[in-house]
Length: 97
Image (cartoon, rainbow, N blue to C red; front, side, top):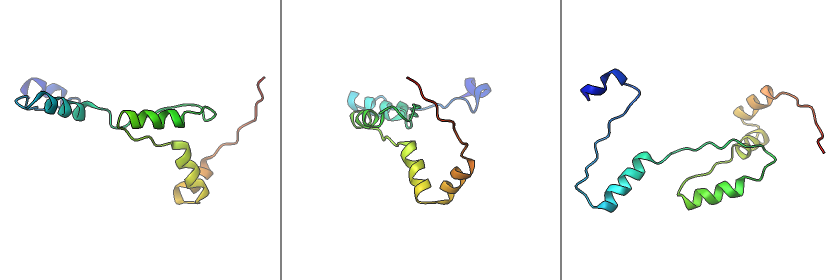
């Protein structure tokens, strides 16, 4: 760790036992380096939910729709939903052809 002291806080040293089987080592590496959270920014009008849910199933992840959570909080009038309503800015409706 002495070589990396100047970068403390920016790096993490991981000790990995490579004496195990290839499958075990591969699984450990995947668990260490697989993304835990992936944020997907998209327009609300795009039908992304089904695609993201299918990808989450395929790659063993969890998909959470932020739009659905926001809607739920607003509809259930939770404390968070009230804050969201208070911060909501009116939008002009624009028509494009």
